[in-house]
Image (cartoon, rainbow, N blue to C red; front, side, top):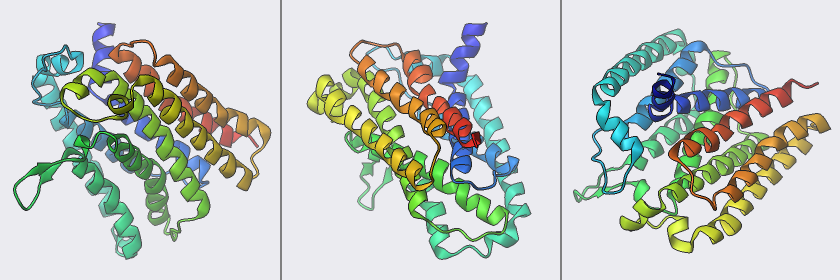
Length: 301
């Protein structure tokens, strides 16, 4: 029974919902802004789970064994019910949120509206659509670009959105600052590195599909030493820049250093073959660890 709950929690993408909430909370603490409303967080959770689950619904099991897709095939009815309930929760919470803050929405600038629409638009293009010529395209097919697209969307949702939403929830003006930009890039690099690690898991399948991810193009060793580790170090350097600008104390810096040390350690561990649950719980779990360390670090005076 516990194993089934564990599988459902990770395969059903509820863990991703927890990750996006935790990173959003961390971002609010680090940018020293008021936390968002429960309605916003509920919409965010439901929308994230729906989005990630959509990718696996209706997929046929490939020739190689894909435990996740096989799980979706076996629990198709349960997943459909879950998606309907989550969609209902998203619509209700989103409409209540709009109704509560409708007056503040009307005062949003064009610049802010563009930012609000940018990240969902890129997320939609990630799955793809039809061009004017009728040819199907999607950003997922661009193997080297895929992890950065995901990192861009996630960083926007968990870094920019909390600021914008907090500004009109509390009737404040939103301004993009250097500090916001540094935090955005730091989160972008951190999540992009996690996505590149996931591409290592899908190496065989991507290679068969001729999807030119980093690991398919340059191999495992070069991916680790020339891509994962440099990006991790750059992300850590951006955090140190952010910490110095805000005069973080030593203890606060140490707390926020933990996720990057773990990120580098996990990158080294990619030499050995891992189970899918290692990727879903340990690698994606770094997002939860990052959020917890970031929040605890900001609570230190």
